[in-house]
Length: 465
Image (cartoon, rainbow, N blue to C red; front, side, top):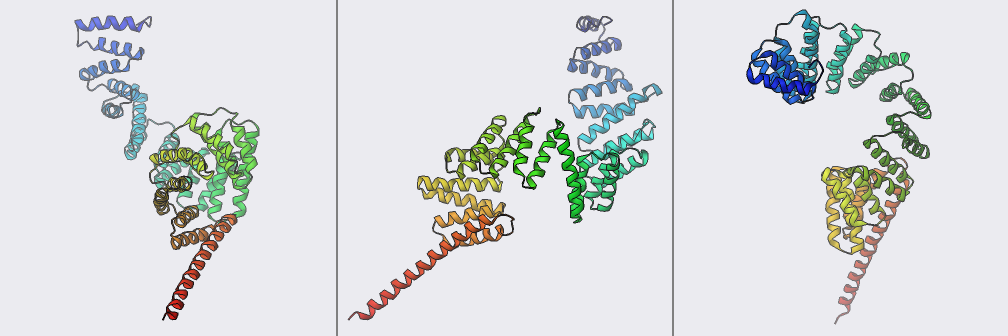
């Protein structure tokens, strides 16, 4: 052990324990050796023996608990930390007792037992084991915020501010809490206070913009959004390595209908180090942007690259399938891709719409009415889940093809009504108006023909002898 030759040390201690199986000293040494060798399971085996010999010793329970935690045995770790906190401790143990309560609190929080976690933190305060209470209060507040218990989170964040008024970051969380509780006045106050100390934080400017939007202060909303945009542009021009900044600036440009600049931002993001998920999302976002320009070949390329990274990415599977359908090509592949997306989300209205539309196109190419019926079934499922004008438009097309003219008119009129409420949808509205005029004209002509036939029959009957 003195030479840190843990393997040989363990071998000799194993021989020693054969001569004295109850030796506390040998068992401790064996646990140490196996821990140093990274053989945590073996170390646990000997510490468990030591617990039986020394059931009231704080250090033994603490050591076993940390080993359980290291190996992912959460329930066992909690049980041992609880045993440790109940043991008698000396002043020399106080550092480890504080660590015990801190670790136990975090385990409880991670298991969703927030109240038990808070009780452990409070115990640290009661025993005067905490020198900086603001940090503990801050951590508790964050945990409650993550659990969406906003009122409790606010309670602890206010304690942070009281314990340490200089902690700027807590004002951001206070703003978020007040915003979630619809106390917009205090939300704005805390955000502004934060920005006085950190004016270059685009996240808080963006959050403040959102709050101003909720109280219909459009001028302030635009001002704060502009500040976020300016900071993001500066960061990206300076070579930011944060993918979130690229994604957000792209979204801002997209909302401003500046698609070329949005594409340029995402293309430049490809040059920075990205993890697997960010690379996938980068290609998927580019596919959406190129789709706005109807550059279908580039859309396909980006979606194929996204699916190479993540073949089970259901959004990309559906999107690529839908692009094939729109261009009336590779319909079998399209149906396969969309069905794969639906396996991940069977009740997704957009995916059901894609599949229904794929069957409609398949019916046109194969000239089989079975596909029309299958398509209508999927589209009617979709419209119950997702009331969108595009879906109603598709329902109208299929109903028309099946000869259900009245049902087609109902679906198209519903689609037209919904499209009228959407900005820049004049082309869709005009397309549906043309279809409605056509079908109404057909119904009118059919009526005239039927009336003509009926009149002819009456005339023929009147002239018969």
